[in-house]
Image 1 (cartoon, helix red, strand yellow):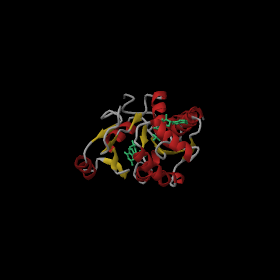
Image 2 (cartoon, protein in one colour):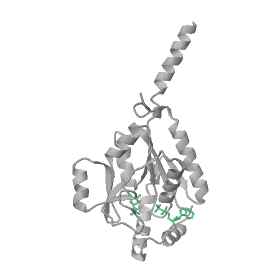
Image 3 (cartoon, rainbow, N blue to C red):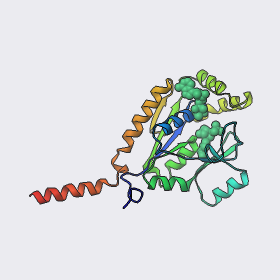
Image 4 (cartoon, protein in one colour):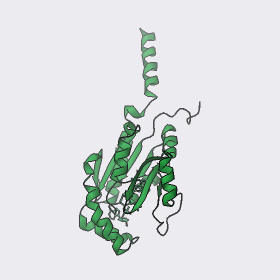
Length: 218
Ligand code: ADP
Ligand code: 5GP
């Protein structure tokens, strides 16, 4: 049997949420570079692409009719309306990855996190909320990112408290002050969660083997 048919462990659904600008995309990119076996959940969205964003890599860009058809067909694990656009996580690639023992990384808002935490995949969720060190610094990061105009930045700032107010629905909460330190903490959390008994279906066989060895010795 190949590894693909019988992975040693189940894949985790690793959810990163934060107010816009706190650093989750930057951290997600660093995690992907650290462990190329992680698969990034490419969300579908009705938002237009930003400069440098590629269809199928950062998002699957589509119109509202196409998006709503996917929701109606049950093809979305979760979906939400954020900053005037629809966003959603396609279900099929997530299922394929976790069954093959690969972790899936989500960059989604609190509404999506809540829906996944209520789904049948909940036992395999690791949810992490990223806080900015201050609101002043959050604004500075949104401005220096240079991807949005002043009106979009102000809309994102107005929404940031709404996102922050859901911090306590997450397994872990990290303050992203020093980027390297936050990255190191994320790696520690992921490494530990991967070793949880619930993530290791092969453990049962291992324990049975120990038991029969034990009985043979008696
Ligand atoms: P989000 O995905 O949460 O909207 P980004 O990852 O795009 O946020 O980060 C917003 C901006 O802040 C980017 O320019 C990024 O380089 C910068 N940034 C992220 N984390 C830190 C940090 N710990 N210290 C300073 N700047 C940061
Ligand atoms: P942005 O437009 O900056 O890429 O994303 C805006 C917000 O939408 C961010 O908080 C991001 O995490 C969230 N988001 C992106 N994709 C999804 C998704 O598939 N589902 C949900 N619920 N939120 C998403």
